[in-house]
Length: 372
Ligand SMILES: Cc1ncc(COP(=O)(O)O)c(C=O)c1O
Image (tube, rainbow, N blue to C red):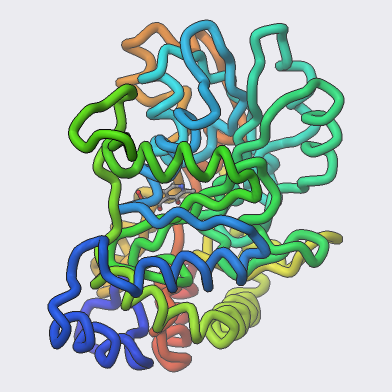
């Protein structure tokens, strides 16, 4: 195998071309085109939600969700430190304070037992982020949120098609968000969606997405919005992808289990959990965490894999270690040992929907050879 194996490749061999050609043939390429509404309705229905607001990416979906909840100066939002920076951007830009919790060493999700101790009179919301294919244990989060009157923002970017105790991820927050980047289970190239059952919140999000145009008088504005609109071209792709979501999830599960078999028994290597009592892993990415007993860490392993033609990516760099946030005076002297450890020692293997079984086998052989 001579070609470099990318960490992700999407599968675009369903109706994608057909729907895209309809955009070209009809001239509907902007956000005004009919696929946008159809995609919003079908995706929201699949996630068990009343409203879907399509936007230009998952980060924008989070920005709008935080703004729509009215989070601002003096407020605190609890979220995991082990996540992508997208989660914290609008919290800090709005003047609110992010309050972090550490990760669980086995699921890599936020340790929900740490949440309640972080609540203060200023806490407004808990942002949960489902990491790498297993959902956050939501029941305790929802109980705490109800007890303290807090909003739940659910970032389901990585778990489109996953369920928590049978309920779709993306249906579990007052407001939930997803991303449609090409490594996600439904892709639009770039894209995202906000999901909610609350009519008013949905209206605010629709307005924020579209520069807060006023119905009364166009070009007269009473609130600061953004242009976060999704194009008809993107929605065309998304619609075709959505048709195959169940098939994609089945494929990801098969691939994850296959890697588990092929990599079983490697000394000092932690593999993803196959299941918890509330969900079966869908292996959005197939992650490994290397033990301190090994002579090399995640960074070194990735270098060696690259030399052998195998793509990989490091785990998230925790939020409390991000220079840009530290320079703002955030998280001073705070340590979150689990996130620091997995952030340093974790990485993931090629795990895209288009990955062939023979390639996974080859990747596993290369990984095994690192440990001989
Ligand atoms: C958990 C999570 N949230 C948000 C995002 C941001 O999505 P996007 O890249 O579409 O802005 C990502 C991206 O991978 C993600 O993994």
